Amino acid sequence: MKFHYLLVTLLVINLGCVQSNGKHITEFSQNDIESGILMDVRTPEEFSDGHLDNAVNIDWFEADFIKSVDTIDRARPVYVYCKMGGRSAKAAYVLDSLGFDKVVNLEGGYGAFIANKNN
Image (tube, rainbow, N blue to C red; front, side, top):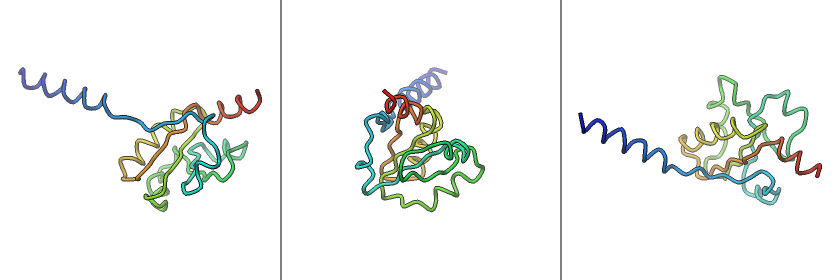
């Protein structure tokens, strides 16, 4: 029984040590993606209401999300954003688990980008 508690404890510690590669969206510049891909994981409706220049829209909620990202070069850096940061964090985790070399979650999302732009 003690072994099971030890195993669970080690698992929790290990998962807690996984580091997310993130950058606040207000610190992001178009120069960051010279050799990378900017991915907007919002819905097409949200994307059509406004998005960052040069962004590719791949909807996180679509059933074929993984199939859609399969067309992207895994060796290029991928910068992911959504409306507030929740979907992009999940998408970044999935991209990382699929073997993409560099995945950066743009924290705060498009809402924070617009708020900063309007100030």
